[in-house]
Image 1 (tube, rainbow, N blue to C red):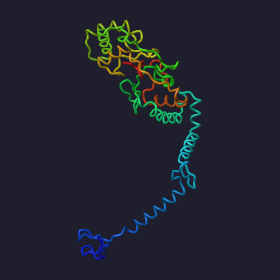
Image 2: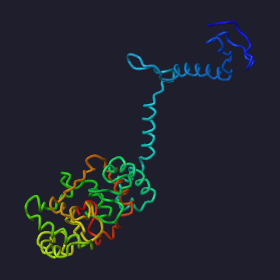
Image 3: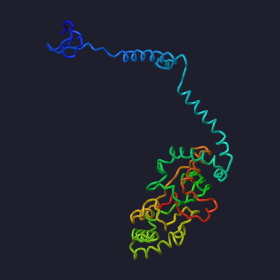
Image 4: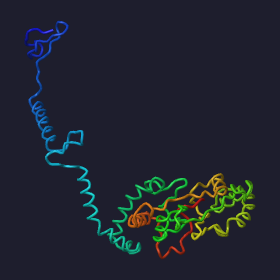
Length: 307
């Protein structure tokens, strides 16, 4: 209800005349002037914004504002400015060999920066943000490569992929010894014991001895008599401690049974040649890239190895 205004005895503030339950009075305490001024200025600012910039939707679009500003157009201009500023680098990358780009520090650093962004967008989903890989996806930071780790071989792998369907792709495949009934389960178990023994893992020694002959008859043609692998055939080194699918007895048996046969896209079908070069240089820079001069004698294992 409403009563006459009076001074509140406790606070000394005039009341508004509104009272509840007979003795609860509303004090007349207006908002601070600075707050009111700020509020009024905000209203004026909003009105000015509606006039100057695009603001209100209409049936046929939206109000353009007196400045006719478009954030989309601004983004396009920024992109064009970026392309223009980097066009000289991309032109040089397109014209130069990977080895020459590697020797040019400015171009190499530009390629690493661009390649890192491309890797995050296209490759990290499988290889991880840090290129650390995972089960079935190789670690690109080490120096263990299936198809070779020098610049040209990394470029070949990225550009055309692995079992991608591209005519230039790496396309060798490990036989499916179990699926195709080449070996029975006991032979697969013995072979797995022998393969694991090459990496000095704990195995059934008697089974490994039996598996040695099976390996010689069925696997040595690709992996070599000592299991060191063969880059020309895409056969991994079986003697190191790096395992793409795991080193357990069951994991190795599954690899022998099915051959695994992982695939990688041909990125030359999705990215332009400059982008593929930049990706190549980025992967090379991660720490596992082999020097060109050493590529011929480099360890024969790595990037897609079905171990």
